[in-house]
Length: 76
Figure (cartoon, rainbow, N blue to C red):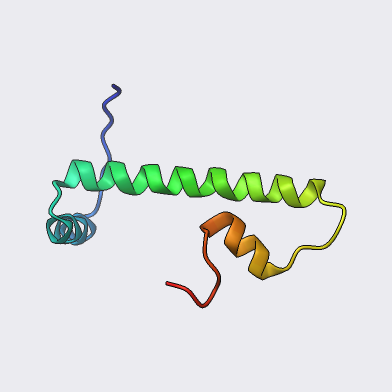
């Protein structure tokens, strides 16, 4: 496993710590999970764009949201 250092302004770190505490995680786990989620979202987005580019028809924004996020705009 690789170890890295991230520098934050103190006020940003405090907010991250508050959020991690709220989730019941330590700061390191919270940040690792947040970054991993962001990377996975980007991968999903790229796959959806590839599917759209390969599509012969049109795809609605609603369909893109379902493909990328697994839900429609009105769902939480």
